[in-house]
Length: 210
Image (cartoon, rainbow, N blue to C red; front, top):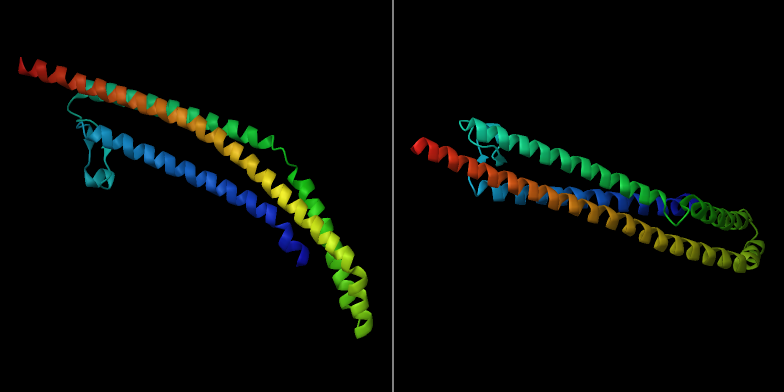
């Protein structure tokens, strides 16, 4: 148990950083969608029928304007497809960055495991002694060695943790900057599609008026 608890420290940090990164990306995508839909709906391009959308506005023009509707939905599909491809490329780039981590996690874990194994062995050896004098003498004799082992474990764990955190920060930065560019391009495409939709509707209204 002595070795198992510390052996899980680096794995816990790795998993926590990955979950944080995934959570932040989901928040950014949700925020992007909310802002985009709000802008489109303010200009009258949404269908908010509760039975179809659960009360959430979606960019769905009046189906009676067939030509406008078709062009808009095609632009919407194209923009979404490009965004999905770019987002996947960003994730791939981030994964490649993660492969190039400066720290060898397995080596660091092995060094910590060996240190703890030696430390726990020393304690276990002394704990097997029934005679009080021998028990205390055992801990006295191994005291300096155990102190060196704990110092080494603390140094290795702290150093590895610091460098691993820097590596994951670099991965996160790569992903965030890449997806930010994709989001800006997506918003621009949808803004253009909405402007073209409004122009198409004005033209249809003008033709109907004549």
